[in-house]
Each structure stands twice: as structure tokens, then as C-alpha cells.
Image (cartoon, rainbow, N blue to C red; front, top):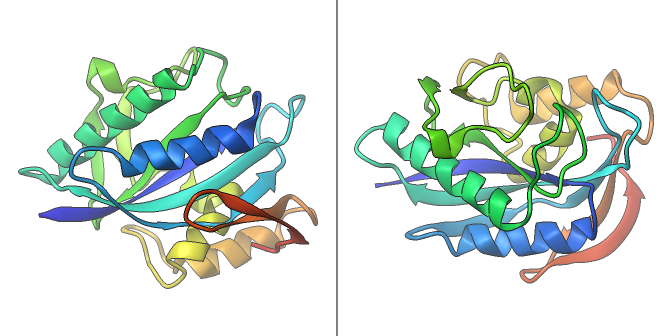
Length: 202
């Protein structure tokens, strides 16, 4: 049985728009996977390490094999995501640093997981503090660069453990950010993001 997963995409090194476009197609080509929807494309200010270029961010909804149990299915998807990152030239850098491509497993159906990552699923971040896969992603509820595109796809969804829907969490977070922290710059047309330029409040 398939499970609806949500994957966050980000990049700020090289031709980031082209990288994210190609990454969406790579996700769609995963074995037994079906790409369901792609959010708008956002330009976002970096978090943590601010002395670096702005990021481009998006979220995809993808149906993937659930596996015999949620842990197995989620870990299989995680390993596939890390494989795509490496195929796109992801290099090991400090936490919150520049990224050729970052793919984060945000949600895996209605599962709440905290499981050890296999070697192929370990983050490339230098000094990564934990080696657990935690789902829902522990930072998602606090990051507008995740909430804004996730709200495009599933505004009414209340992820496991959250006290509000994605749309409500996005509005809350947007209210605490400076104007322009997240801007829409593209709309997915099936092949890539068509250019768009307008401010988004999340």
C-alpha cells in the first residue's frame, strides 16, 4: 500500500532553480512512486548561517511504497533522498550552510517516527547532532521556508503531534518573520516552475 509523503527541497549553490526542477523529476522517477503535486517555488532568506545566498525552496507530495511498516517505508525513502542528493553533487558542509541540494522527509503518512538512520541515510552535514530519522520533521513547524510551500499542497492537514493545521502554523510563523522573508518566484507547470514574482505572507 502506498503512503503520501511530503518532501522539502532546497538549494542555494549554482543554478538552484534548474537543480530543484531536475530533483522533482528524479523524485517522480523513484521506483513505484507517483508524484502527486508540487508547490510553488519560493526564495527564502537563510536560517542559522545568514552569510550565504538566499535559498530556493519547494515541497512535493509523493505517493511511495509504505513497506511492511512505517519505519521500513520511511527509511527506504530517506535512503533514496540521500542518494539523489549525492547524485546532484551534494557536498559535506557545516550545519545550515550552503547546499547544492537538500531533500528533507517532512511527513510520511500519519506516522510518528524516531528511528536510527542506516549508513546510507546519514546526513552529509558536518557534525550533525543526531543520527535519528524523526518524522514529522522536528523543524518543520518552526520554519516558514517549509510551512509556506507545504501550505500550498496541504493547508488543512494537521500533522501528527501538531496542534494546528499547516495553514494556521504557516500564518503564525509568517507573523513573526520580517516582510519578504519568503517570496513566491515560480509556479509549477508540470515540467518546471514558470517565473512569478510577488510577495508571499506564507
